[in-house]
Length: 287
Image 1 (cartoon, helix red, strand yellow):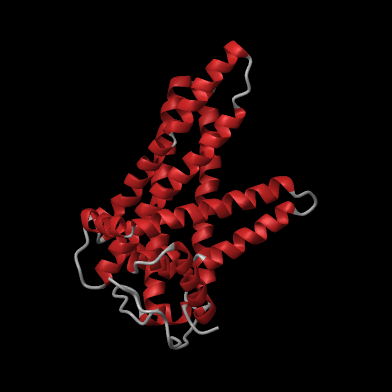
Image 2 (cartoon, rainbow, N blue to C red):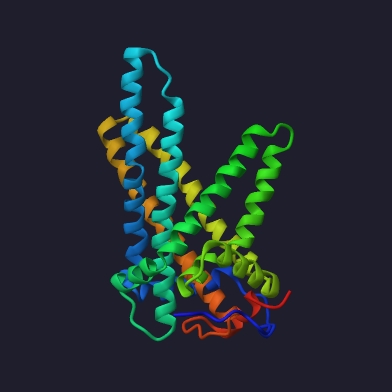
């Protein structure tokens, strides 16, 4: 499966409503129940990727109590390795979901198995992208921590630039057998040629994420209030809220990925069944 690189501008149209695109992506994703389960499976697998860090932290802290050693250096090293491992897992499932979306829009009938099979074929791109994205994140975090008097601003601008440049990277890796650098170049090229209100759509998706964060804060307040009455009940309420919010965040990520595939396919001149042409014409027009 290969996606052509955009060569001519999409026709202009009225600015789309971000909420409309999100609803279209959600409707399309609901038609693929197995694809909807991919982010959940990926989330569980990512938690398993943190096990090495948890184990080494417990072991090293237990050992330091006996010999007064400082295990922080080893823990930091394991934390970095764990970050890479989690990034590889999350990227794999993100590519699998994007591959399933491509297959559906190509007229196929994707399953979890077929989507993951494509992600496995793209394993070099998956691992390479995970390493690149994690490295960029670690560098920006180091700048934020080490550079005084402006490090936070530089890191924030770096995050924004990276988010824009890598916007289409996952759909590109899912559709093409390319490495991380090539995927980044193609993603950047597509954004430069077709930039319009795709950023506005992403902002709307970000607002949904902010809404989930506010619900999380409200949930913590509710748990604190219930704890005054019953500790057991507070634990139950906390677990239920955590599971609901986690599922909501995973689904939102899936909808975001599906919408990006649709935008990329339109920018690449491919069919996007389930998404109105006018909606995508305005979302991806020549700069």
